[in-house]
Image 1 (cartoon, rainbow, N blue to C red):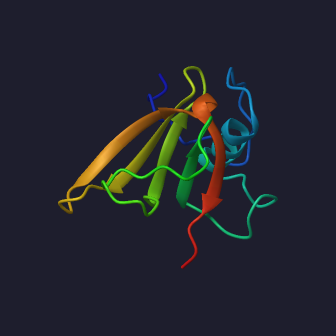
Image 2: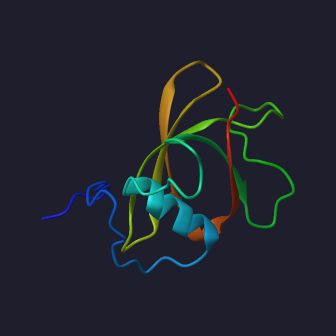
Length: 108
């Protein structure tokens, strides 16, 4: 039985119901097959929702929130991310990857 956020099958492309560029990138990241997208394991990202002109921010500020990618469920298109809220508490966000227009690596 597969977990809701199964990130196994390293290097394989599982069958997915999720369509779109961001879903494809997240699916590859979840399966450890992102070598042709970025040069290393990129897990901290900014997210650009469809219909928006700026990256998502969850802190009440206007700076984009860095999200740590935790995994993805290919049947439901749910991607799981961790972020820190305005009070410094860790939170989990579950986002339908098909609602995202873009994803960008957080520079270190």
